[in-house]
Image: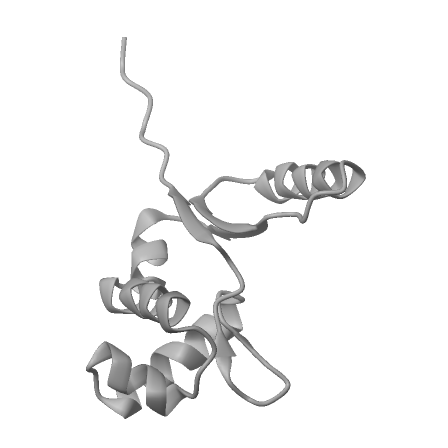
Length: 118
């Protein structure tokens, strides 16, 4: 399963829901969809440091926030804040034991460009 993060306009939620229904009907795990209204808001939430944390967490596997901070060589307080926000967005989950984990194999960021003027 992958996370698809996109900048999308009105009605995008219906497209994402249809894709999830189709995947479930085919017996596949549906992809996770997260939409933002603008590239500015997407990159305000998914900073390079947060994207690096996702990669580090996927590489080291389920661990405590403290262990993640050590693996990422970052300040614990900043990592804690980033993990909390990514949990709210659905990009990080907690195990029953309280460890954090990335449930996705990959993250795909879709950023459509404006149409060219003819």
